[in-house]
Structure formats: structure tokens, C-alpha cells
Image 1 (tube, rainbow, N blue to C red):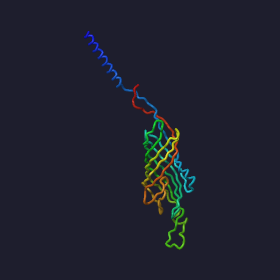
Image 2: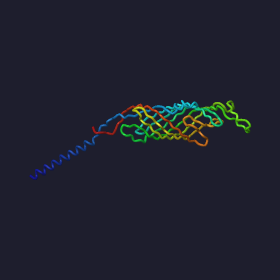
Image 3: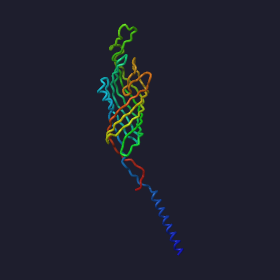
Image 4: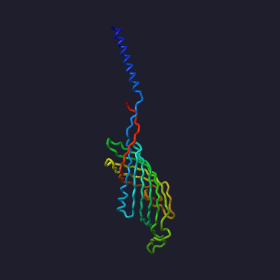
Length: 246
């Protein structure tokens, strides 16, 4: 009886061992890759601040188109293209600046969204360049006496349009985008600028640059903001995910 129980235990152990080995072999078999659609999105829209300001400031006209493309879980390639025209009256002169600019860079979303949400709190970086021109409308004539009021001339040797100029700068950005519907986003970003290259016109300082704002000789830094409305255009492509059991 004891021998029969012993052989039964041995045979049962062998079956259990074989079953365990077979299961392990099954688990190390190559698993099929399952492809699932990954959704990305292109967002495009405008800076709302510039057309609103254009309606209330007769010395200003501007428009900016904005967009970003999601290329990773948190990473976006972003760009802004715009045009500005502005007339400025200072203490000694009146001048007009007009031109276009482009900004290209990246945004990184730092916000961990809850399930069902798609909002951004991001930091970003842009390289920017403008192509613009200045026109000196009038200026105060320098005189050494003050018996009469200082005259203003609009037909002096310095009046007129300067050659086409170009300025380059870098921007560091902190901003947010809020999903107000499944397709539309409101965004706000604050920007700090630093001029990298700045061509100066003859006999005239580069006092204002489209896309950058005011420029001074003593300070190459500037700041701005934009307030955007964008529309999301989602698209999908198939990307292999981690292997899963068949």
C-alpha cells in the first residue's frame, strides 16, 4: 500500500512539474503586437488681443495667427505669425513702424490632467524674427536758444522711410490653455524677450519692433502677452504599443 502511495506521489509530482514547465514555456512565447490608434491634434487660431486693440487704438493695427502640433505625450511644436503697424508719439519725434514677424519653438505641458480633461499649463521657448520698416513723420528741431517755441518739422532731412530692417530675439514663455468645449481652447501666455540681433537704421534708433514691442538702447529685454482662441483638429495614426497576451 505504501509503495502504491509513493508511486502515486511521484507520478503526481511529475505531472505537476510538467504542467508548470509547459505553462512557463507558454508565457515566454512571443506575444502578438496589438496596434491601437493614437490621437494627436493640431490647434490653430488667433490672438484675440490684437484685433480688439485695433478697434480702440487708432494708432495701432495688428493680427497674429497661432498654432501648435502635439508631437509627444507632453510636447508641442508651436508657432506664431503676425503683422503689426503702429504710430508712436514721443517727446521729440513721431514715427511709424510696420512689418511682419514669425516665432517658432516648443511648449512642454507640466499639468497632469484628470480623466476626461485636456488642459495645459506649459513652459515654452521661441526663436523669433521680424522684417519691418520705420518712417519718421516729424521731429523737434534742435536749437540753442529758447526765445520761441521749439519748431517741429515734417520735411526735414531726416524725415521719411528707413530701409527694411530685421531683428531677431528669443522668448521664454509661461502659459495655459483651457478646454472650453471639445474643440475650442482659450489660452493666455506671458513672455519675456531678449534681443539677439538688431539692425539699426541710419540716424534713427530701432525704437519699436513688431512682435517684440518697445526697444531701448539701455535694455535688450522686453515683455508681452497674448490671449488666444484656438480650434483643435484631431487626427489619428496607428502606433505599436507594448506586447500583450493573445
